[in-house]
Image (cartoon, rainbow, N blue to C red; front, side, top):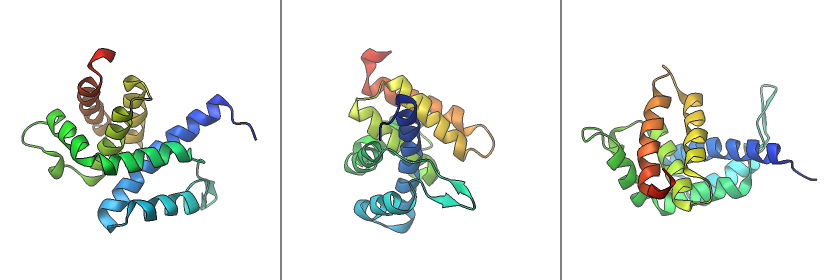
Length: 155
């Protein structure tokens, strides 16, 4: 089966959302990387819930983001801390946003995706988790700072 560029883009977008969910799940449940990746690949990608079919994810993107976020967590958390105000270190923010910044930081550090694309994609993920509409602006500001640190030549 041939996958169109548009379908691959949708699969990568879904994988970013799944990576945030997986990292959040790891933090609250103490699952290992292997356990959470296996669960998502076997039970989440393309699954149906109440008649709604979940988007199929791009396994390579999903694995890369989750594994790199875990492997580089200390570095990514330091980048995030530098982007946050001094009174709000990463340890004090909601675990959902922590997971998002780690997944986005992993993709920024990987360097295969242009930083501006990473920002746009993860701001869209933030919109899916937003309660009052303010979070995407906060996420955009933090990711912009992180992207400029990771790729100063791209801006």
